[in-house]
Image 1: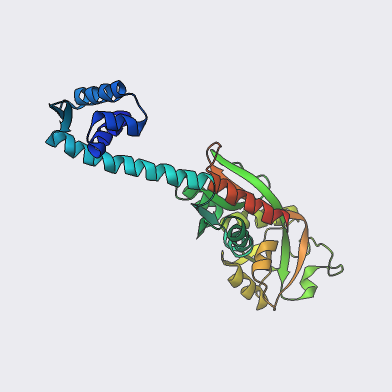
Image 2 (image 1 turned 60 degrees about the vertical axis):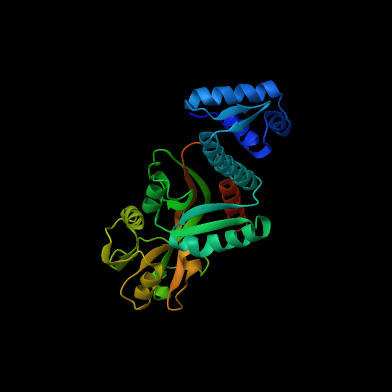
Length: 298
């Protein structure tokens, strides 16, 4: 493998026309440049320079390698400049996966903050439920994932999940009578809803609904299932069933035909997930810090 310092010496001779001028340009002693050139010829097995009088000139092989060397050193300099810009957050691109209601509520606020604090950063947003987002992290397709988890769900191997806040679950129905007794701002339980039909969401949400209903003493009669919280609320509004939705889903979209009440003691954890051990690139850390700030300000 060619040593970059030796390649740099050859390029300097090509540009300046002599070993002494190359040494001055590189701030090396002339013997150092001569040593690098001899070692480069030994490494490549090629004659790169010829003595001409008291000076030297590059052979055809030397000129060809020097020109390639200019390209290589130029690309290296460009890479160093880009990394320096990214480390100082002047530029950078971060790929974020987010579940739908998080993408509709938390991410826009984060993008607005980033535009003010780090205008050189760009954020690529991909909508994905937690299982898909986790696989995208493992595959290196995204840098961060906004996910959620319910209590007692196991941690994912190699996935670092940081809880941002608890997102309360709400009973959603077409009329107040189905919410149970209590003031409008009171919490409710599900134990009076054993004879109702239910509408459920994604697989994780379905498992949590089964758990909540089991704790209330019944098995829900699930009539419909959809991971689209807009469609779920529309179904509830027609009166065909009731459901449980997290607060972010209701914040992202609220059907005027439904009424809601928080379910006592029920919530999911909204999380910020990444793959592998720290440290993370500066741009990724900036996006993570911004999402934390958005979560705290809620």
